[in-house]
Image 1 (tube, rainbow, N blue to C red):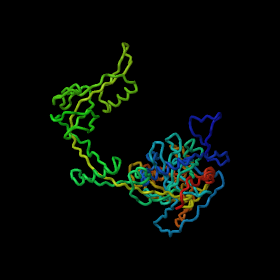
Image 2 (tube, rainbow, N blue to C red):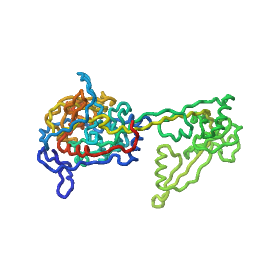
Image 3 (cartoon, rainbow, N blue to C red):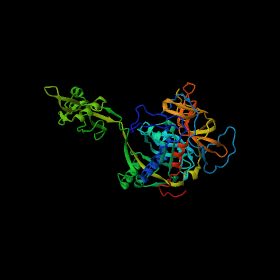
Image 4 (cartoon, helix red, strand yellow):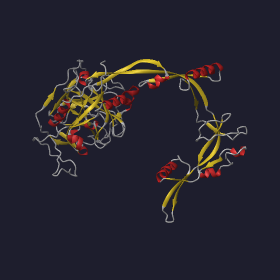
Length: 551
């Protein structure tokens, strides 16, 4: 039991964390830290919409959270652990249907799933988690760093959800929005990886499926929230019959209806000299195609001062001859105008990146001090002929309803693993996870699509790593890589029942033989203080945030 010490006066020692050693003496246990992940109905609704829209597109786009996959270090032996309280266990929830055990087939419990969240960097990640026994059957265990973003000023992550038995964008047992995250004070405040575990209460699961498809009007299509798509029928406008059909449809439904036209390949143009039969031109932004005759249009182009000076022709609005309007004819320039320093600096950056072609100047006084900033812009005139064509079509609109249902409490739906603490080390455990990240040498044997597992005895001695301020972890020989973070270490796992006791969670990935490949993983030792955090979470209700119907 390691304790974080504070010096007199309350100031944190500059040298960081101080360990009181592996003492078994009773000391004040800090209250668990609990943070709301989603508190209001609006927050929950936004989270559900974010992950489920467009056929769970966000779930499919997330990647494994692997902040440390290239920082694997060796674990060092630290010594025996002295229990801080009596050992204890909490029985699993129910019993899954027994499946005959096979020598080469490990039955994956449906309690195992992916934890999804948005990091403070705005990227979408996943870890591994499992449903675990709780008084309200609403609890998930995972790693602390899958709840707190340690790269984001120690804040809880956003849009946290748990999807049990997740597979390729599917949520067969529903999606569970996190309500409150319970962690040890030493982790949430001091980033002490000896406490890298979290227990998260979740709201009732949200399930559902696609409803009936329907053809609808344009107005109904625009208002629909959920899956929708269009189908197009194209018309040959040079064919008199098809032209008449399109014109009739356009007249019936109006400009905002299903009968539309658009320019295809509008950016394909060629420069041409102004032919004598074109007697007008328009003023347009760079390469905007509009107006003109026989497909030839006037285009006003922003250029540098030197390009403007080199341009031929008069290019004034009173010009009437072809020479006045030949390619790159001068068109116009502005006077120098005063601008703010902020505008000057923005345009200076735009000029460096090719987004601004004009001239910028700093106006200085006799002392060489900048007292003003100016800009001047220049344009030449090009005549261009577009190879673009107008296409004519009619759209048909389709929508599909997606009806959400209340899947109920997590533990009632998938069951829950038991919980154990202060257990002897050197015992057999089975751990599950969704590994994905490459090994430090760049090899990538895992896809993150399916659940993998490791089985073996944990280290008899506690292990540590200075890189993560670790003194009280247990190790397991296992080659799983990040993505498996937060996966449960199940003591006394029954392959037939697919149930055991969570006695650890995957925290770090380590390379003991220095070959740049993960060969050991480690977990915090679950002790009496872990039990305090667990009990606080296990006795916290969540329930249903919305009155969705039962499936």
